[in-house]
Length: 193
Image 1 (cartoon, rainbow, N blue to C red):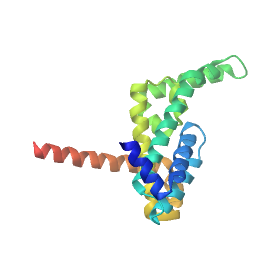
Image 2 (cartoon, one colour):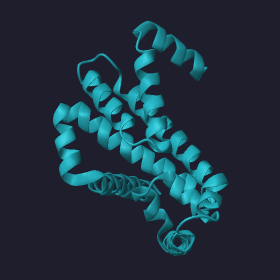
Image 3 (cartoon, helix red, strand yellow):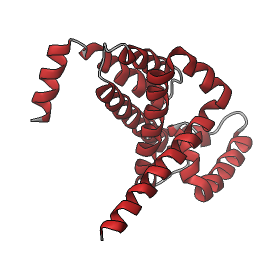
Image 4 (cartoon, helix red, strand yellow):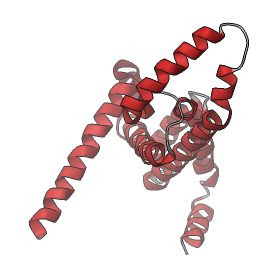
């Protein structure tokens, strides 16, 4: 039923390429290629502000692409990254020391690390899927909401905000907003009981 609704919506609005483009750019950005996802989402957010795209579908496409790309990057790191970095060759002792240091960091701060490092690094440091996948989905949602809504509300000046605050600042702000929403929902549920 959802697939039928999505097909009809994209056919009637003739904007499927835009949503697919944002999805694919987000996948590429979150696997390992920084840049295209954010640029595509900003452009599409501005387009949504001009009523050429629906904001909800746009944010969903960006979130889905970022989640999938993050998961793919994690799998690449998990399946091949560590073997590549520990292989014999130049600077092997330095690489092994960096791996050991990274392992300690991910063991202690793995959840935070997902927000501030590329997804393939979580795979290299053998972060469990039960720990990585939910945090990756939340990180992707915060990214889609902060950049997509920012472009929708602020237009092209969102690039200045992102440059000034940095990605970490945007993610912290998004995390605080998400925490506030969860606390408000929790309070509402608690009152209804």
